[in-house]
Each structure stands twice: as C-alpha cells, then as structure tokens.
Image (tube, rainbow, N blue to C red; front, side, top):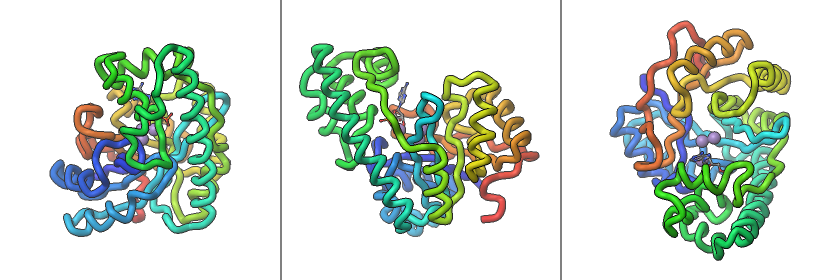
Length: 275
Ligand code: AMP
Ligand code: MN
Ligand code: MN
Ligand code: MN
C-alpha cells in the first residue's frame, strides 16, 4: 500500500486541479489518497470521481488553520463528511476571516511599496474563497521580487516581514470538534514545522488529545528523516495514530511528489489501521 493522506489542489493553494492531482498520484503509485485542501471541501467531489476512474481508494479530507498559543498550526481532518453542516459552518467562518486577512496583507504590501498585490494574488487563485499567502507568493515571484516561492516567503510573508499580518484562525478545540462532528479523525499536520520547544510540543499534543484529536503526521514532506523517529516516539508516548502525507502542492513547488515518502515504521499504529 502507498498511502498519501495530505495533498492540495486548486481548490486551495495547489497548482493542479483535483482530477490532475489524482492522476499524478496514481502515476506515482499511490493507492490510498486524501485531498486535504485548506479550510474547504470544494475539490473533493471531482477528486473522488477521478480516483474511482483510476482505481485509487479516495479519502475525503481537509486541512484546518488553527491558532494555538500565538502560533498557527494545521489540523488535518480525514474521513470527514463534506456535507456535514457543523463542519461546513465552521469552515465558512475560517474562510471569511482568510478573505479579511488577504485585504490586510495587500495593505501591508502597499505600505512596503508593492502595489496591486490583491489583484495579483487573485490571478493565481483557483477558488475565490481561498486566498492564501501562497497566491501572494506566486504574484511576488511573477513580479521579480524573488526567484521562487520559498525565497519570497522568507523575504516578505513570514513573521517580521513586510507582508506578514498576524491573524486569529480557528480554535484548536473547535477545529477538532468540527472534524469529529462530521465523522472524521483529527490529525496534527507536519508537527516539525512549528517553532515549539519540546515542552510546548508536548503541551500541544496533550491538549489536542484532550480535545478528541487522534493522530499525528509522522512521515511528511516537511520532515527530515530524524523527525520521522522523533514524531514516531511522540505518537507512541501520546497514544496517537500515525499518518503519512506528502503535503504536495504542485510540480516545481513541492520537493516531494504524492506517495514519494518512506513508509511509516512498522511498530507504529497507522491512522488507517481500521479503514
Ligand atoms: P496561509 O494559510 O495563507 O497562511 O498559507 C500557508 C501556506 O503557505 C502553507 O500551506 C504552505 O503551502 C505555504 N507556505 C508556508 N510557509 C512557507 C514557506 N516558508 N515556503 C513556502 N511555502 C510556504
Ligand atoms: Mn498550502
Ligand atoms: Mn499545512
Ligand atoms: Mn498542507
């Protein structure tokens, strides 16, 4: 089995439309695929029918933006019901705040002498409800501010840089509740990306478990091999199920293709063990 439970499409900040993402995953040998676009489920129907056509098992997913202890963290929901009203209403509030933030990012860039960035970002947006920093980054690359998206983030879009605006996303407990209300399982996305001390990471995982969270990404495109072991240990310590996902956003932008990751260590209990 080649299980990839974290990918993006043009329904959020990915470069491929859902059916093209599924084709690429199938070509790369993925057998179980989740589409987990940021804060919305608009791509799932197209991805599901493409997956059926290609003989892949498809998992409905979402990646919810959360503020916790002053930082942004991401919670992936898997096996969700995209039609669930509680989940839908929750995601709607996050999307509305995302649009307000996009206006603020544009104003901040304006003050830094970079004009018309909202229109510029919108030219890259696949789903008008989801304007992401990634879309601003693509605009900034287009206009020659940096050679690639990664560099542009470091220069303009991370904390302390001209286009960064602080933002309050969903609360951790709310995001987990929306996922569970829709029948899904909540998973901490790419834990190695958060700037947390060992003690803070433990506090996050303890609170996540208390809220009803169930899993953690151990093997992800964002982790170095040492982190596979580190988060495997934390999964065991906290009794969390382990997940594997590339966090693929698109050719040229993502280092790792769908399914192109090491397998989870065999002693870990996988998030898909009872699917
Ligand atoms: P947003 O949710 O709009 O704040 O955008 C977050 C998205 O930006 C993430 O999901 C990644 O796709 C992308 N991203 C965040 N940090 C970086 C970075 N340092 N380099 C490249 N892409 C990044
Ligand atoms: Mn993204
Ligand atoms: Mn993420
Ligand atoms: Mn992601």
